[in-house]
Length: 101
Image 1 (tube, rainbow, N blue to C red):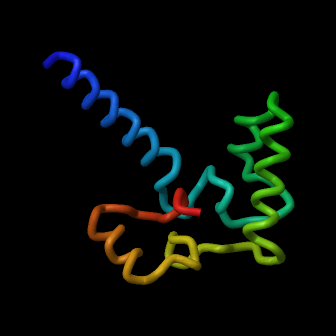
Image 2: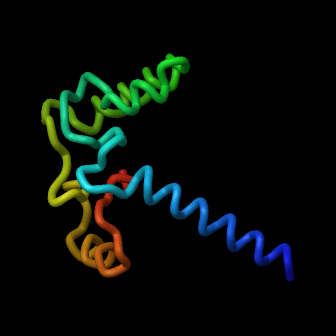
């Protein structure tokens, strides 16, 4: 019984961390944050400063997502998402769709 309780606490903690890091207005701190597609957002650059491989991977992914645009968001949700899915996410409490790319 105690193991199940700990597991639920752990799941709640992970969910909160994901929400803080990936579900925020403007998708700040993620690879879909508005800006120059050739550069990582400042917070990501700082986070992966010592891990050049990860930083390069994120830059490449960002370039692929953005192409020549400076924004891929529509009302804080990735522009390619199905509008019905966005409605469902909002109903469940999501404030952005950064994590869905």
